Length: 441
Image 1: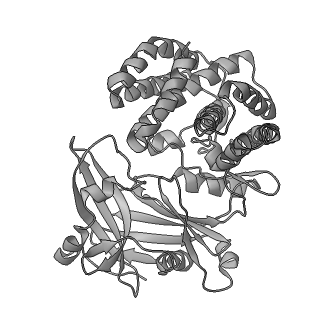
Image 2 (image 1 turned 90 degrees about the vertical axis):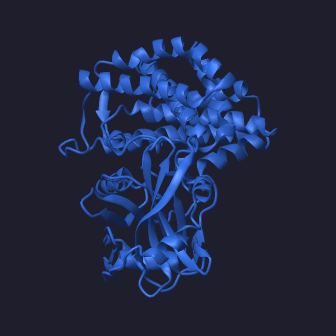
Image 3 (image 1 turned 120 degrees about the vertical axis):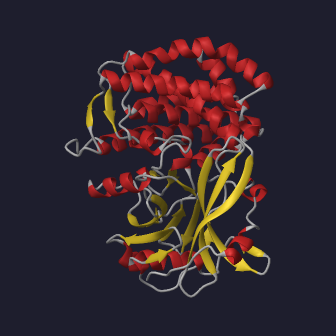
């Protein structure tokens, strides 16, 4: 079904409730290190038979940089508000995906596309809606016990790597990733399409690996041993993910080949930019500490440019414990969207699989320090070396040359984390900052 609606003056007045302070306060808002100057309603499309609109808001910061965000809005007398669980809004979006529907706005349209697996998973009629709580840079909603809908809040032009990679892994029959069930795309008139949502199979789980590791570290001593065994499993899973992503090298979007000198130079330049970006978002004592570590960081990053012969493939791109679900048999990998602060082109480009390994090593560092900070976990130095060894052993081990490259990617990741924390969780800056001081030695 296609509807023709415009963001008329009435809708603009209602959208004033979605102000700059409101937007800047949302967990999924990108750019918390910059001040929002204004928020404008760019487009709006109404869900059939409801008072719910899919709103496209353009936020412009004080430097003049504009970003677009997707906000489902329910009309009330005083303005728009976000949907509440149980109002049927999320189920309406699933129905649009199932029917291959289309919603027309004033300056673009939303197109919905189902995958073959959806019909069977939808069988059974109405389902309960439950928004996922916690740290998320998008919004995820569980529907019944079979489906999960992700709303991509930051609308970025280009192919979404999560949709692309999940579909590929389904095609090559990789069993430890969710089944893709459908997607939603926003197509601005005269512009490039943006991913607006993804529907996939809900994987039965006991929570994510991040919380599981924290629970293991916070409990009896035998929990630490259990965590090490699980981390070895994660290492093996990581190797299998990388093997799957490299299994169809004849496809241009999923290559597997030696990295070119041009790519190595680009990877090194990207890592150097991460350091410069980290320096740009911190001030005061944090900046002084980072500046003191910068010469050592730059020296260690040189291993990237010198890594001749390393493989270039598609990778997960934002690999950490929170991207793994703990299941009855082990772990399942989710969320192939890539690092939120990187461009879509960077996230889709071939990279070294060791970037994922480095990301998981950084995640283990986070877990060890957070568990200890909260008072129940062991001192990081008493557990973390064994955890790192377990991960690398499960992965199959690294050569001496790979160790140097992995160290460089770990430093790059810590620089990225400083940028991410400054934009999203400024009170967490202490953790990657301390890590860089250790890694740069």
